[in-house]
Amino acid sequence: MQGNNILQRKQLLVDTPALSPALSDMQNRKHQNVATGAGPIAISIHRNIQEIEHIWRAFEESGICSLYQRYDWCANWLKSAGLAQGGKPYIVLGKVDDKPAFLFPLVKISQGPFQIASWIGGTHSNFNMAIYEQKFIKSVCRDEMQAIFEQIVCQAADIDAFELSCQPEYWRGHKNPMGFLKHLPSPDHAYSLALAATFDEVLAAHNGKKKRKKYRSQMRALEPLGGPKLIVAETPDEIDRLLDAALAQINLRLERLGVANVFAEEGVRDFFYDLAISSIGNDEPSLVIYGLEVDDKIRATFSGGGHNGRFSGCFTSIAMDELSHTSPGDLLLYLVIEDCIKRGYISFDLGRGYERYKSSWCDEVEPMFESFIPVSRKARLLGGYNRIKVVGKRTIKQNPRLWNLAKQVRAKFG
Image 1: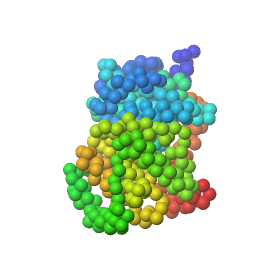
Image 2: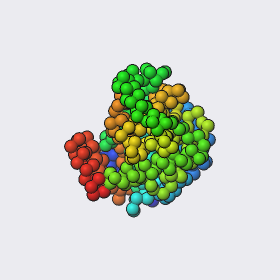
Image 3: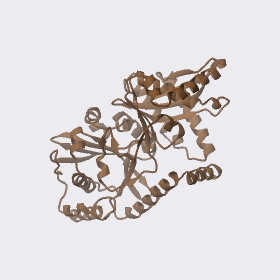
Image 4: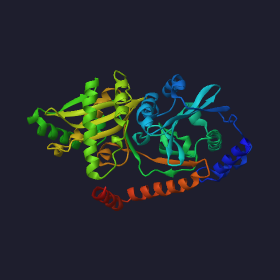
């Protein structure tokens, strides 16, 4: 009976549009190692993140991944925001010769009658992917990746579907292996820039004359109030102050735009606070919060973290007050990029979603994609809905007239 269930799940994987029909010749394979050019891969699913902490921490340093796959990021999210959502760890680990080849940091969450496996971090994660061993990510091919995910599906007896969003097509020059599977382009791209050895070099490559002129103008405008002060939160009190300011500013802005505030969800503040606290003193913090203070008030914040030389912006906020006309957010970003260069970072990103301030700095557009892989038969209908949702969002966001109209309607009716 169990063998029949496995065959049914494999057949569903073959039939679904999420993966290629090339898997149809693999129907007789059960829970066994997958043969790849790197060697046979043993796949296991872990529901206790602490039991693989030592493997994970070592792997994130030697492997290919972003800030959002670091153990500290994932563990802190699971114990706060993830816990509040009823999320449970669902970590997929693949090994070759007992050494990690890939690690998918997933969480199992209930969505109505469905059990969905998705990336840890939810909407707060800008770049979602597995951690990959460097030789593996270079050598794995389409057929191997399809066979690997077939085996993952065969072990996912309690999952109805994998919903894997916001995945970069490339990371650090490597093709994302999940791109070998059937997918859809994401509604949003991500934006980044390479950092040079000096801030002057970065400015020269990004309309530096105009940016310097604006910087001087901002400094003159704020001088009567004592000028701006850059704060880098390095104590619990500073983290508390800047985080409270950021969340209040975000809440007011989203309320006026008629957008649901994901930062107000249960556990989210605890997640960011604990992550920032655990990052104090680290050369590459998982989260550091910057603030721009003028006249004893926080006028803007910028939060992000670093990993392997890349600094990733996570969220920003601006006070909507009497000084908003001076563009404190732009001034803070100018100072943050300057600080990141001093700290030795070699690249910098502002996450996904187009904004004017991103295009003024970022000359690299990073395409993203979405994967929805039904496992159970009842999830097929959900897969159709997911496709319509992704295509609809992308169509609206890529059409300036439709996007402006959508924002106007959203602001008016919420």
